[in-house]
Amino acid sequence: MLSPRTFSSRHRALVTTSIAIALLLLAFGAAKLLTRTSETAYRFVVPAWTPQPPREIAKAMSPARIELGRHLFYSPKLSVDGTMSCASCHQQHKAFTDGEVVHVGVHGEPGLRNVPSLANLAWMPTLNWANPKLKALENQVRIPIFGENPTEMGMHGREGALFAALDADPKMMALLRSAYPAKSGFDIEALTGGLAAFVHSMTSFNSPFDRYFREHDSNAVSASALRGMKLFYTDEIGCRHCHDGLNFTDNLHSADKVKPARSAFTIPDSITGTTRAPIRNATRGAREITWFAQGRGAVSYAVTAQCRSNRSVYA
Image (cartoon, rainbow, N blue to C red; front, side, top):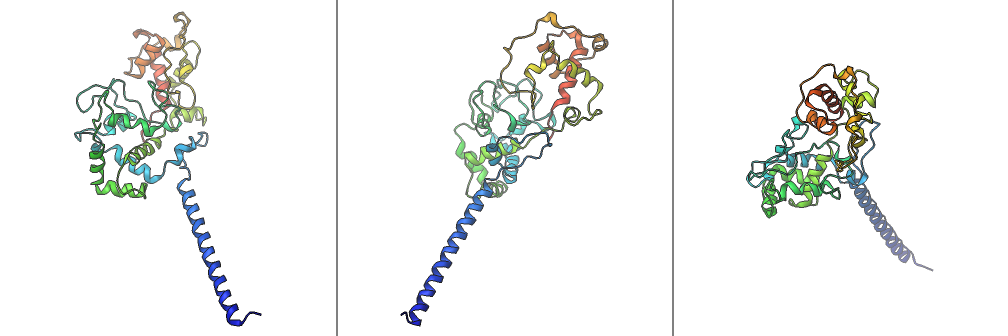
């Protein structure tokens, strides 16, 4: 029979062990909760008819990383001579393009392609016509910063200097600690992850076309845009064969698709009755793809009006 003293000692040991186990379980549960919280997918604020983008994109995002990316996007520290930022080419007041044929890099070398808009890239299956396998924005953003052919921002081989410059900026470091608490300084993951999070957050799912087509607001688009929409969706002109779906594009090269015969076009008098002056870029594209001569200004204007009612992001 156990003495009271022996029973008391064993009881205390049992209680101590139980408390230790309980604390370990609590710590394990808290760690799991923190891990689960950090992996919780970012929720995009978009209309109800818009699907959420792939979960792997959303999981890499957070409000803190978006804010870090915003400051990186507008920072000239990302260029070799401090004269260029991402926003130099992707200008907000021009739907995050620059309106030019190509943009010139820090050394005066012209780019190879015009500057694309950045709207809704989280929903794009690929990011680059020249390389459809390039699907991760974290990889794409390296090209203008570190690429050499052509040289855009000129930071190839200067990664260490770039990270050191960002580390020396107190505001950037505060944003880094909030976005990546485990990091003590900038690296390629923080740079590309922050930029990708910010760019992925750019959406344009509340355009006049969306309100007309998705939300049935009959007053959302102009009469000219409605005429353009009828042309846009005809098989004769065929815009919709390449420009379809949620984003009016699959971001793939489609110029070699079968083109309709020129004789297939019959333009109603209600469309061609008045010739309008062509609008640069979008109108030119409508003429080139649909083979309309300069005299068909009303047709290209109508198609352009439809295109412009679709998606332009001004975030």
